[in-house]
Structures are given as structure tokens and as C-alpha cells.
Amino acid sequence: MDMIAYDGDGLLDVSLQATLPAHEATGGAFPSAFVRENVHVLPWGSFEIEFQDCSHATFHWTPLPSTGLPAGSINVVRASEPLAGGCQ
View 1: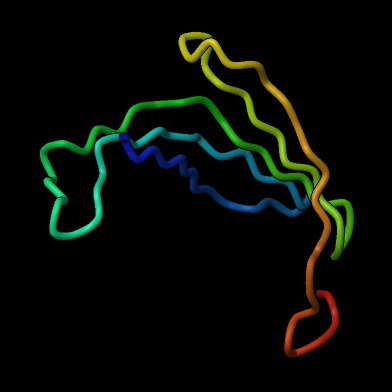
View 2: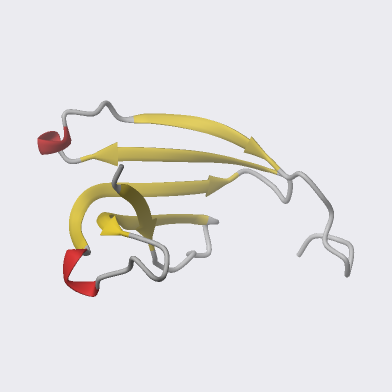
């Protein structure tokens, strides 16, 4: 079974929203079976996270048409409080 991972990176703007390019990585394996040449990273679409407040956000995903997958979203809620306390 192939390992598949999705990732995205970007900046959070002052509106508390970030849109990130998403990539799909296939062919990975745990050591000692890892072979760098087997890893392929391809564009997948985009991720967007939109924070409503310190405890609530909405995560959206928009795959490229070539994936054959639908776009969607899910509401997320903070599961714990930061050790330092408070929300900034």
C-alpha cells in the first residue's frame, strides 16, 4: 500500500484567513524501506483555513479537477487551551 501525504504552506493574513497550495506526495516509506527516488510530489489543489475566533475555524479544500474529488469544508473547534493561556 502506498503512503500518501497532503501538505500546504503559506502565511496567515490580518483577516485571520490563509489559502495554501496543497500537494500530494506518494511513494514514501518508513526507514529502512525509504527510497528517495520513489517519492513523487504533485499539485493537488488548495487548502483554506478561516478563523472565526480563538476557538473556531472552518477548513476548506479545493482539489484540482484532475483528482476527480469534490471540494468541501469542515468546521473545527479548539481541543485544548494553550499552556500560556488566553487568546491573542
